Image (cartoon, rainbow, N blue to C red; front, side, top):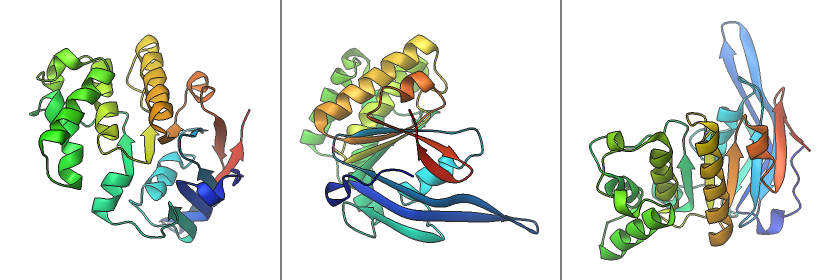
Length: 227
């Protein structure tokens, strides 16, 4: 099971999470007593074959779905509303999920729009984040004018926009070539370490998983420590 060594200072703590879905007459047990905690600035990777429950687990950790059983605490709180969640965590998806009609800068600012109003300091922060991810000169380009790697860098900047305590990254390099994927992972790990942001990375890539401080394997509904 996932370790709980940092439970007292955890950004997120999950205990004995269970989740099942009914399929016809069958009850599919997707998660069976998952334990996980992560401290500020710590990184953890979760690998698992397709259908192992990785996306289900991420949805629970993000508060987008509720477990059938078990406890989940975000910095000690058992509940988190929509606005607080937007400030507390950032999410990076495999398919970028940028708004095609908005340029890179406005896509980064969308994270602030969800959490509250956009003001001059927010615009300065968004521009600074684009510079940090190497896109200072691309802020006014639409997603269609950016490469896959550039779009994912915009997504990384957007995830960091509200200075979250936790980032959940769901296969962030799944649509990228190997070289570009490696650079995005290095960027993400570096920025999270620099800002003391906790990172939970779901990936099929063993080389990327190996770069995180802690490594887990989700198998048959249970989370196991991996080498």
